[in-house]
Amino acid sequence: MNVKSFEHVVNNIFAPIYPVIAENIINETGITRGVCIDVGTGFGNLGLELAKLTPDIETILFDLSDEMLKEAQQNCVRMMLSDRVRIQQGNVEQLPFEDNMADLIISRGSIFFWDDQVKGVNEIYRVLKPEGYAYIGGGFGNQELLLQVSEKMEEHDPEWKNDRKKRAGEKGYVHFENMMKQTDISHYEVSRKQAGLWIIFKK
Image (cartoon, rainbow, N blue to C red):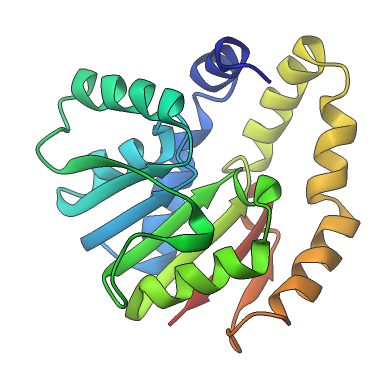
């Protein structure tokens, strides 16, 4: 998907899901202060919605794509969050952060495209503070939003339903379970929460 097509999908079709996912993550983890990293942030939609809800969190929008981060920076300025949100470029497989520095690491939609998921998850675990949470995967906030997005996405891209099934269906669930067994993390949950498929763990 090119940037223009991605922009249309994120800012129009997917727009309603990000505030709901952000609120759900805050409610489930209980984290409302410290440092949050949104890995594979794209245009920053989820990280910025979380920042709006948590004035005591410093948010880092992190992505490999310079083009995506330019859009994220513009969104950050537009939402008047530049005082506590910053942009950083890099690869999840080699996070440019110190050990034990983040209270919360979130990622929606990007893990499916990482070259080495085990390495990426291990890096996230390294960067988390003790008692910090990671919430990684994909979802739509709730079933109603999933149905709403699905209807629009099937019009936009006839292959979307099959692509989503491959990533988040039963094979995706089994893949995540097998992948997590190869990581450094002993306690985790592969969950169907938020009308999706998530890996959730606490350090």
